[in-house]
Length: 247
Image (cartoon, rainbow, N blue to C red; front, side, top):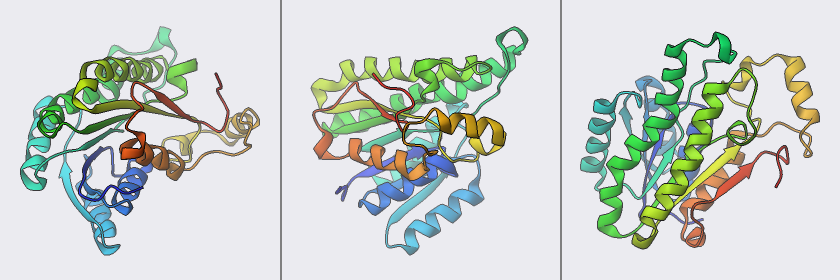
């Protein structure tokens, strides 16, 4: 997978899937703009990519804040010249049953997981239109496809990303900009580390491949969708779930 000459922006890059995506894109030759709230973790990631011979720059931001999103992406384009690839990965959870869920927790998850993707896409699309080439890849979830008790806000936000992806795919296809989603299943990240061992064991029994996925499994799918080899794929949801959900 060759992404030499491309510039990728990855949100939520300080850890987990976003961290793995940034490293994978850099290994494929892309210059990577990494964005998240934690500046020190971003600096460590940039140092790691640079030490391996890649190119990266950090842009601290809070994707739930529209003004900060606009400022960070404006800085990234000014510094790196363009954005060819956007990976909407930033996400949080605030789990609770619907009947007990606080409006603030609903809003926080929808703003961070879904609205941020719209905001980021809106800011990078002009750069993509100018060069008539672009890749917008959003990290959804198997729970956006099948639901999950206690995660109505999270499932709604991830399902929303799928709808947003398909709408943008139709809007931007004529300009050679593809829009796709990747829907991970159970992936070994900081977010899933909080789950009980009993829950994890039950989950693994439902996965035909018999294991929890790694962030690198998702990153490989993202890299493929970012390449020229995936130029005829748009409006698609690529499942990376070990067979947990099929069809």
